[in-house]
Length: 238
Image 1: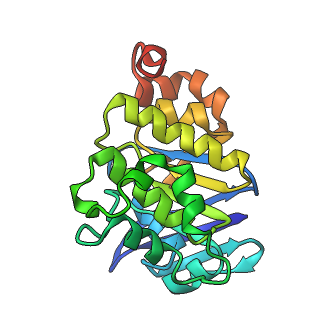
Image 2: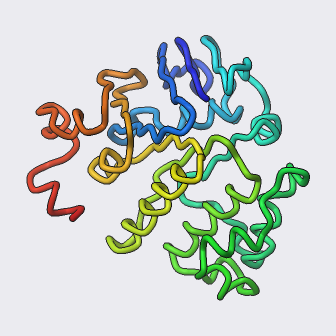
């Protein structure tokens, strides 16, 4: 579904992503973990055309998508749930969801189906999005992305700033997406939760992949434990 080869991109002369290669197969959940400043968000922006690559190749579902504009990525079935949610605070929940499906009206998921998946949003359909709790806003950001019926969802730090119970709910939703046939590329600082939900994972450091493998293997990897998981990581999640 997604293949990146030798990608280089950044901001002006600063190359944040330096020759990165990875792939995400259809139906997988693949996680990308790494410290702040590693380049995770920059990579997602490059995948949807918000940052132009200066080298390398991006292929989505077999077609060359290198350097395409964001609207083209959406039209081709890619949805980004951005860091910090970035909902339209002055619009209602319903209006946010309608915007999500606007670009692909022929393929858009009926809003009723989105509300079925997120019952809290149904209860607050007429409420201004900016008045929702952080967890509810994250659900709205997910729902807005799913309204376009994407084949590939890019998630940027979906657990950021959420209470532990809401974090678990978000990751249950991510598992449900896979069960419904949606491919997920998950960028997440909560390495424990990301590796427990993912099939495979990559570790990013200063714009380069330094480790990759089955998520369960990386959970047991001493280097990953020391750098990203910490002591007692099982108790944090369970």
